[in-house]
Image 1 (tube, rainbow, N blue to C red):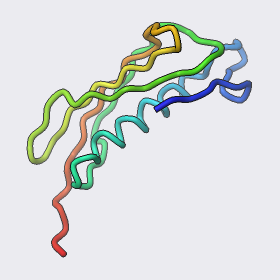
Image 2: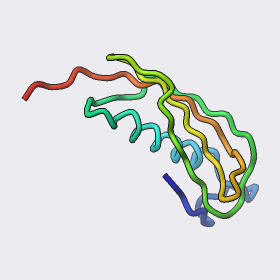
Image 3: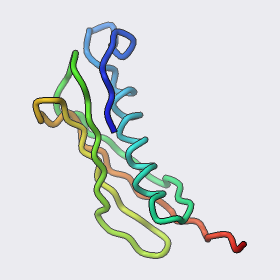
Image 4: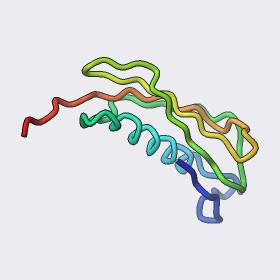
Length: 101
């Protein structure tokens, strides 16, 4: 996923608000955890901010760290256009029982 930073994404300090970075990472996590045709919901997430950013484009890339029939663990790296790591997000998803048709 990607996000072009605009003025509305900045906090009073002039840097991108942490909630914006979290939302980008969470969206990538949601897409990845629901990519197995089984509805999944977050049961735990955390984020670590590594570097402040003020402009440019942010990218979020989710990697499935582990999965089993009920749980999936994901790492999402958020970085800028120069490949600087901005944040690392970790998410645990619960895989719901697939509804029978």
